[in-house]
Image 1: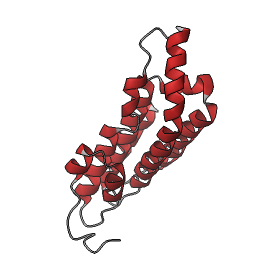
Image 2: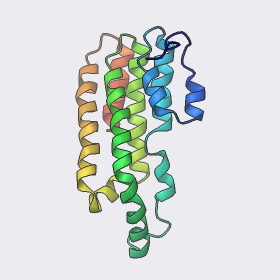
Image 3: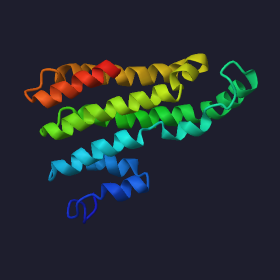
Amino acid sequence: MGILDGIFKPNIKKMAKNRDIDGIIKALNYEKDWKIRRQAAMTLGHLGYFSGLDNFVPMGPIDDPLATANFARNFSEQAKEICIFGEKVIIVLTDALKDNNPEVRIQAASSIARIWIKINDTSTLRFFNKGDKPNMFKILEMFEKAKMQLNDALRDNNDAVAKQAALTLEKL
């Protein structure tokens, strides 16, 4: 830990601009200000860990062997990085569902849903299923752990947290 750690509030906007995911994750544990933690949870959901995959979606039809082969070649290189990165993000957002502030818990649930929607939008699971089953199962396992925590959040004493958990579970 550096000498200046904890003196200045984390600048989430700057970290997002620089795609400093590790910094944003660290800010999610900033105990001094729940607003910083809420903003960090929101930012992780907006950045999502699959945002770079948009460039890898094949241009041809899904059944086009050449497009699928080109996609698979590029995608297999990215798959392990995506899973490692995604694991970090989903794990910290799942942990944030236990934050002492309800606003942070609400945003964490919302961000988990946003990332899941991003996965489906990029047809990621379909391509994992075609050739990279270990990483597909890793992704699904992360979301299963999130679902367990979201089920606990359904019983949260804050009605807004319970409602967001229910909405998120509907999307997963």
